[in-house]
Amino acid sequence: MGFWAYMLHCADRSFYVGHTDDLEKRIAAHQHGHIAGYTSTRLPVKLVWSEEFPTRYEALQAERRIKGWSRAKKLALTRGDWELISALARNREERASTNSARTDAVGTARQKTSAEARAKRRSSTELP
Image (tube, rainbow, N blue to C red; front, side, top):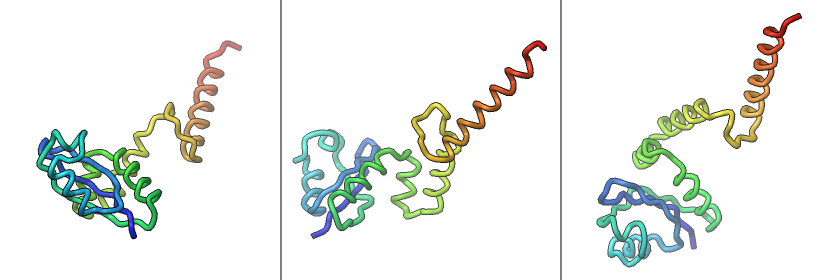
């Protein structure tokens, strides 16, 4: 038995992302308004993307990751446009603030470089 991450396109043009162990049953429940919450007030809904995963945890990880994506990136996923998805991911990394909670090596290096530049400016403006 597999687990699925899926994305629905709602009547209000928004997207809903979820995961399940029975894709057909879950989509039918969404389409008939049997699942209270977000999609029940945005009917009809249409399945626009799904992917099977070997474990529930992996399907949940995919759901959470995709929920954080921009609308443009979600649209690219529905078209299978991996080149655009990659480009949109790079653009987001380039726009990331040094004040964000980034802990990767690139973010740390940028923060260190910025701190060094500020220290250098301060020392060059100090009087002898």
